[in-house]
Length: 154
Ligand code: DQA
Image (cartoon, rainbow, N blue to C red; front, side):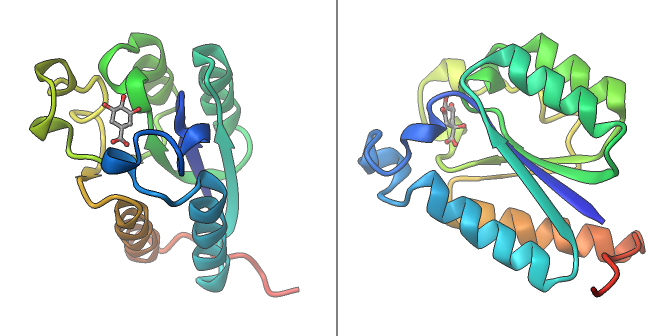
């Protein structure tokens, strides 16, 4: 099955963006580990980071026709603002897991509301780069328990 990982605005700066909150690991390192873990489990992997809302909306819409079985998304600041991205996920009706490096509930009040959490299979937040690792574990378990066929060995 295919897992699609989406990352929202400013996550391209991971590694030197507010390292006290987001850590020193780069998005390329996180993405590489997610790809390796997904492929080791026999699934296909695709990912996209964008600072532009419409690019993420377009990618979610495309997922409807490209065999994506599950989406793992860190909407970043769009978590708290984007009805458009929420509507896209609802429209394609592909299950998704919401992930955050920080714990938005332990920060400014405006981060406490997510436009995604009520639609998500689940939310993993607050564990830094490990949030992505735990989210991948959850994604792989979900794929297994829903018996989605794996990539054929080549
Ligand atoms: C974030 C939390 C958001 O509130 C923030 O806007 C981000 C990153 C996180 O991963 O902790 O950009 O999604």
